[in-house]
Image (tube, rainbow, N blue to C red):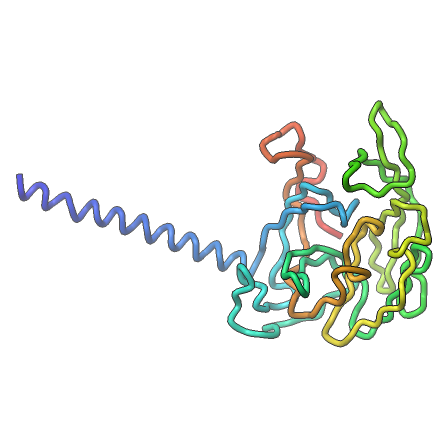
Length: 259
């Protein structure tokens, strides 16, 4: 019996060793993929409506602007600055690290280094010139009494809803995207700002849901180049509720390119 037991023990140890190696390899591949290529990202707030909705699960490209310490999980990169860095384009939707809290934010890049940015009566001005706006059909969503600023509340289909003014905004480089105006109070602080001058090596970001966004106008400030994490590329799946509730999946948003 002893020879039999001795013959089986190495096989068991080999099996455990192979399992451990497989797990380690899988973790390393996942870390490399997430750090160098694509990172999944979940949208937790409505600051980028209607481009991005709460419950969108998307992928950001990590290679678009090169790599910084923030490219690695928990910002554990062992270097400062950027490697293989390229400049972002105005209008890109970008995930970045908050300059003070290090939280992940996602907003649209509106101001480049050297730009002068100002909001006047709800209209974005870049270097003294108002961007082009074209009004479209209102954006309708259910009222969230805890989170939604809205000056036009109506009952639609038996449900209290918010109608938000919707515009196509065209930036100086020709990039067009939809923005929302939830509050007709044009004297609001976020609709009328001082002139911001974007310093070298920094960027100015704004949410597309202009009256419900914590961005460079207040709270966030200018974002250093090093803090850019990646460009939002693709909405993979989208759910208006817990992911396992298939009946809440928004199939029309699956595999949608982010503009």
